[in-house]
Image: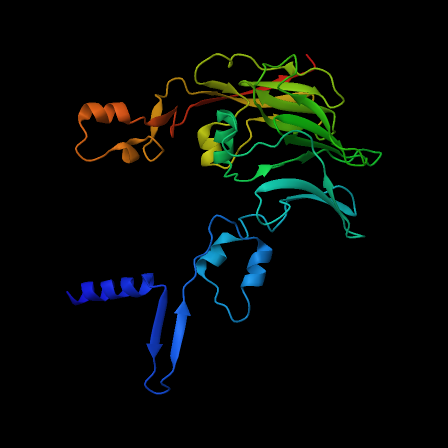
Length: 331
């Protein structure tokens, strides 16, 4: 009973907007006013800096809100030359959308590389993209990766940048913006297909990627993508050039194919999971799912009619049969 009274007393004090008290020693009266924070407006880093003065207290919510994870430190840092390096970084602490920048280490000048295409946000990715993002523990959007060729005899380095469903080629020695090489609108690709895991050969001559369960290659200077693997498209549970679940999730190997330095050879993984039963993942807490749909005294018929439980089905958590092949593209 004493504990319940204490809890009620604490709740009463908490919800009271104004509290007055007197001191036996000073016999003065003080007033504590409780204010409500407008949660509809996100506070920026500048807002917090102005708000958290030397006399204010830092709450756990202040510490946990900003900056967002991964927004204050550059990632994917790579040297373009002796005095220039590239890196990915969101433009501010409120954004999870990364951009590509180049820093001149001599002058300190920072330049954003303007990559074309419309960056996708969460909820807009295809199933293949979303599964890959989850297994890579990738939360950021925008330019999330890029690759560089090795420097050629003339000091030229070619960059490859996937963004907005397309693949862009970047001449790092030029001031021109990266140019679109291929996207899902290309004649040799199925319209609306997803381009996954684009890579560039070390010599900067060849680009490879996975599309619709098969591997394609094409020259960096343009042309048409050529399909070089067969046997997976349209076959349930089979993929070419995509790492299997256990390799990505447990072994931290996201690659499912590898290009030789001059782009003439390509090794790839073929995964056959057809013998693994599908496993259903039910979204019970989703809107319209089981938990939000049930009300007292609901009949079983109403329960079935009202509950719209969304789900996914995957060949999940079990090893498939891995096969390895190498293709000589000169044949």
